[in-house]
Image (cartoon, rainbow over all chains, first blue to last red; front, side, top):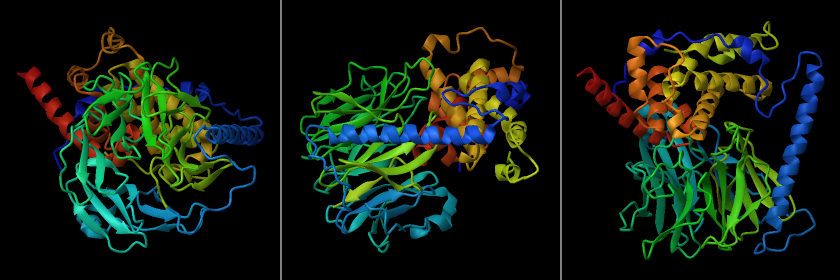
Length: 372
Length: 166
């Protein structure tokens, strides 16, 4: 581990005592319960929050149901999908797990000890993330962060057969190509990378993913088009600037021509996060408005065509990001956060034509992949 | 620098109302404020981010299982949001609202010259001793990327400090 910087001169700064201000301060957008009637107010706040959350998610469900290319929604409650469907996700303590779409059969597949990771640096410094199903549905690809290195690993759906493809991925979020032969990921060098699924290199025209802006939200996960010819991702609008202070655009890279298109050029203050490409060829993504006057901008949800046409905002609860589609495109897995500043993971939900239902609460809201 | 676990405070049944949070404020507030000042270079942003993070934590009550990491993460996100919202010429060009001790002033000036994510990583890790997973959550990036920011930030900061010393 590299030597720490000596920042002890900061100890010489005398901070103000703010406690009396904090006690009197109403937080932005959140009511502050008084001591008198605290219980009643808390109950009222919880009820109100539940109503708001329910309304937001119902709006999201309605919006999703009304998408022109989505299958016609049923008025009846959704029947649980067939048993083979399984969703891979990341638990709140950063382990890979699976669960059926009806919430049954939850099972944690990794411990952090596999491959000698936990023994070498301590399990607390091992974090698994970004699960992706292989095309045949037998194996999960994922990224294992081991202190300051990142491994590309696989594990079978039953938790057996842990395998390390490379201990030098040097990137965080992977996405498999539709045919399963390639992996795209955001490199720690700020470039978009593509490799074969065995870890060997592929020559593509690189594109900037993100740089060192101070206002980073959500995963820097790229998204493959269903035909495998393009990759959508959130990146700096000018291709070289910072993805943060200067906004963050929805970019689409054509893998055959190397052409890079900015689909949100007219929205420079929006920071795009969590891009997902649906099987119906619609791109769905979230964004936050960096120009918001009070700094507490809600997470907006958008859908657009692959060429930027038909972009429109979908109603949402302001705290939801898309994660992945169901294999047939009839449902969307979404992650929810607590209110601004969006620190709290509230888990994964499934939105389909008729309802929104919680899937797992003990989950990192940003990750998930749905096996056919 | 290691802090006592916040659960020690929250599990104390004798404390009630905002007392646990005041105890937490007394415990982490000074270092959090210095860290926010070192990151933002602005006393007003540091104070506002700290107060807002505590106010939101108080409003959430028992909903937050581990207030200490929550408050660190929230405070840095709020400060980063405020920095992003302000025009570039608003930050760092203000007249200092009060004098910093010379060694600290020297350090804060150098920190202002490294990119935001590198600055957060160096300050949270090397000064406040926060775990890299928490920094990753604050920045919404992977732990591996935090290490990259740490490495680059330290190198750049050392260079800047040597340059100004020379």
